[in-house]
Image (tube, rainbow, N blue to C red; front, side):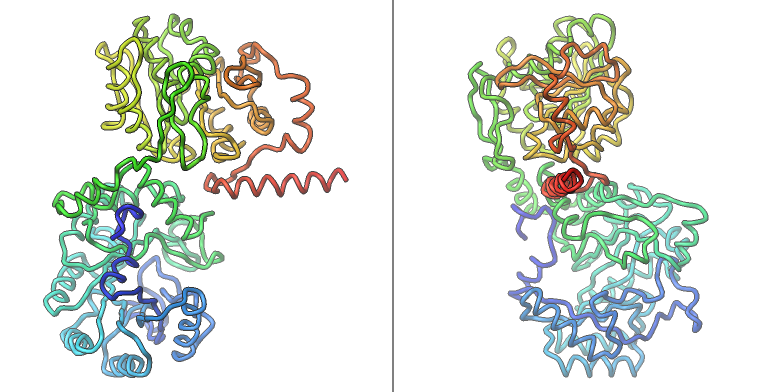
Length: 593
């Protein structure tokens, strides 16, 4: 297990450890159908399409040998595969005498090191166990059980045809026979909650499984579940929503349990909902990044912790010098981010920037005199913007509530070990440490508080409620971090600001100012500090804008330079956002040529 890179135990790493090299799956479909369906094809599980779970790689191949040869060609060409595993996956494998002979025939004619058979718990009869014991003497046998959930009410609702106890007994009996078992789990089945998913993780962790395969629910056309959804829609998770329940599931899963996959794929034309923008590889990378940045790992909430994996978890959460301290001219400390290849603040002064770009333009002292102030701090980072504001509220004995959005828990940890306030060296460190440990801090008089929401701000902003007097927008620069400078993100911020509220940012880029205007803000400038140009102020109220934009900016906004950054679904990578803008610029040039 590569604990420093992947926060969950990837099946590929497990295979390398067990077999010395990854085994690439060769899907095989005997086209025997499913015993849970009627002869006319009706019945079966409500989520299952007509083709069952057949691999999309071999949909065009009908004969078994054609399937195998095409699949072998595919994994060798694409992955350079040298070692293979036969995977009998479509629908449900049965173990009738003729089927057993087909398994033997295939395995004897091709060079497979192992075999994986997908089946149902209630299809494992006494003769089936005897046959599997026979196979296991020559090949390493894996049984992948379609368990889906541990909750009987859900199994009944999706017409699964067996209960949870059937799965439990099958896993235990396979274990007694020395046969590997992996469980298929669907997160997002109708009627289930985050607590239900968590319970499934916990009960599966207590079984002698060798792996799990996790799917997000796809609601497909021409299925009973699809008909149910169209008549009475239920929650279908977007990429960001699913990532949160998946991460929580993984945290409650036994840390030594390999994860075969974390999402599924279907033919796009078959999907009713959810319609994702991310590919499987993009989604896996996103989940790994989010878990690493938040310092969370598979099994870190599993109650029966294994000391070996506790050590791995602790080692992986170290800051690893990703945030290098840099002294700025005003005596405060900022960091240089290796990830974004930028400083968090101007080297003229980190604290100076917080005061002059956010605190003073926001007129916080006068706002605090008139009543409780609500601040949304987007990209908390080292925390200077919030800490300066918090200190002012404490000095005035006023009420202040700050909601902070931050993706990288490591930077808050590093800040808690580095930053101090000249007037009270313990206060800021105490606040940062509390935010790192508990995601919240409250003053002794309970009039001031900070809450931090961890994760991609494009998603966490959806859970933010209420209206804000001030919004501090402080990501890395648009070329480095365009995800939070898009028109779509500005539109979300516009919904959260009070009628007389003020959005402040250090950034003066033309596409950013143009995007704020298109999102419904009045836009102006703030005084320059540490950079040639001033920052940007935006508000729903024209009267809040004290310094108007220069005429040159207004002219540039009408040119190709004024094309804003876009991210329609809120899931594009920074490179994809930049490339999309390049395409828009090329189209703009063609239209005026």
